[in-house]
Every structure is written in structure tokens, then in C-alpha cells.
Length: 169
Image 1: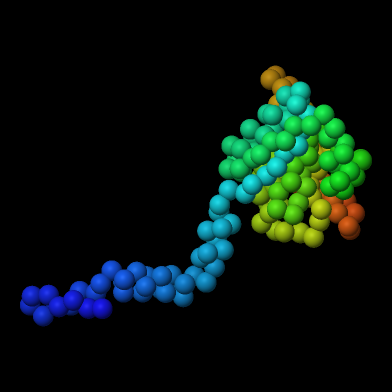
Image 2: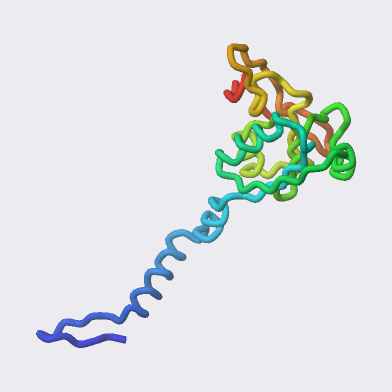
């Protein structure tokens, strides 16, 4: 709808302008809605033992990276690992679920973001054991260990990333 102004100029109503702006955005960027959804914080459910301090420190690392976290505490974490298909050789102290993936142990947030962006055909990521210097396992005045982030699933296990502390190598 157009509105005539003094002097013969035309002003379009807000509805027309908004409709045109939306259409222009959709034509210019057909992935606009997908991008907005991808930028939204992802919800992660972390299952941990109630008395584990390093798990809580890892949760804070993940939260500070922009993830939305729900923590579930249970003294029988091994049941969760078995239900989610975490191989025994990759087991650590906490297990998380995000989208269709399992995150086992002290996996750096950057590796999780890469997993979610690349969407490989896998069950998840794991950092076996509790390497010193990994997120949540930082020890003052101690050199961080180098460790592997392992991608695991139906095709087996392979290295996904290598870190020293929270720094990729």
C-alpha cells in the first residue's frame, strides 16, 4: 500500500517495506534461517558423578564456550556409558550428549564445535583417561600433557584432533 505525501512523493507502508526486506533477505541468502539456528547455543546434557570436581570444571569450560548445559548427577555413570555405546578403552569420568553425538571425557570445546560443524558419521568424541592440562584437568605449575581426541563409531576409532592442554596441535 502506498501513501501519497504533499508534493507528489510516495511513501510505502511498513508492511510493504517489511515484506520486501524479508524477500530480499531470502533471495540474497537462502541459508539465513539455517545459519541463525546454527549460531544458537547447542544444548548438552552432561552426566557425571556428584563428587567429581574435574567434571564440574569441564562443564564450566564448555559453558564458557557458549553451550547450554544440563547436568545430571549419578553415582552409576557406567550404566550411562554402556547405554550410549562408549567403548571401555575410551572411558573417562563424565559423559555428555549433544545432538546425536556422545562426548566422553575432557574433550575441548573447539573439538566439539568442529564435530558439530562437520557432522561425520560417528558415535562421538572421546578423550580417554584424564590427561593433565586438558579442559577441567588444569594443574597450576604443571606442564599440560599432549593428548588425542578420538572419533569413535561404527567404523572404528581414529584420531580426530591432537591437543596440548587446550591448544590444538
